[in-house]
Each structure stands twice: as structure tokens, then as C-alpha cells.
Image (cartoon, rainbow, N blue to C red; front, side, top):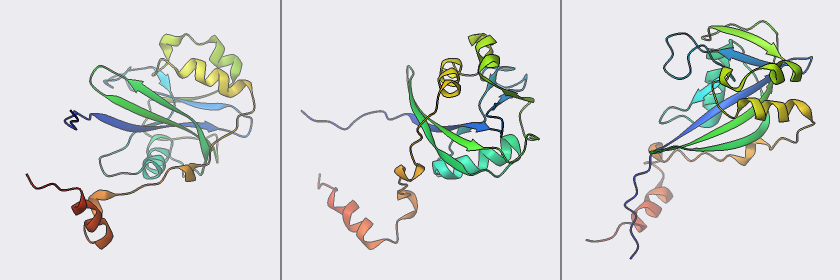
Length: 175
């Protein structure tokens, strides 16, 4: 028997591989009082709010985390993190820095190359997969997927759309 009584607990997050003109990647350090991996190094970015698209999250996190308005070059990878009670989709995107000078919410910043990342211990990173992913990214030419692959449908704000209402009503059953 079919049932749709699932407990959907999930989140979307965006992490940004910011590259400078020398090809180095920006790492940000979490503050000491941060709940997730304090003082660890990772990529700028974070979770989307309940009504925020991934592109909106990208722009918000660029300005908030590093103080720059950047243009997304494309999507490098989508990582699905399966945890005990939730699933998180991490959209790893690439952007070019407009300046090596960064300012934002992070405790500290550093630009790293392949050799720097290889020397770091996995326990220094905010995410378990960061070291291997960055080694792969920095080791070769990467083909990025265009962000136009992502289509956003803000159902929460489509109440005035007649076709949307007609579609929504077609799924209601009389019980």
C-alpha cells in the first residue's frame, strides 16, 4: 500500500570555491564560539533560509562571509550528506575573486594552493570531504555545470497564479 507519510527533514547549502588570479582557493576559519567545527577551516557559504533560492544564498554568503559581490562561474559538485535524521545537499560552486582582500564574518582567511591543502590534516577542515575535494579541484582542469541547471519554483509565493492553483487543487482528494 502506498503512503506519503514521510518525515522530510532536509536542507540545501551552498559552499563557494573562491579562486584568486593565481588559482589559489580561499579558506575561512570558523569562530571559536561557532557550534559546528569551531576554529576549523572551510569554504565560505552556508545553508539557505526557508524561502531563499540557492542563487540568493550565494549572493548573501559572498557579501556576508567575504565582503565581495561575486559572479558564480558554475557548479563543481553536488554532495549529498546523509545523516541520521536529515539529508543535506551541498552545492559546491566556483567563483573568481575580485580582490585578495576579504572581510566578513569569518574569524580568519587564507589563500591556499594544492601544496597547502595537501599539508593540512583532515581534522582541520569544517567538512570531512573538504580536503579530498579541494585536492581534486586544484589538481586538474574542471568542467563546471552551468547554474542555469537549477530552476527555482517558489511555491510559497505562487498563490495568485491561477494555473498553479488549478494544479494544486487537482491533487486534493475528498476524504
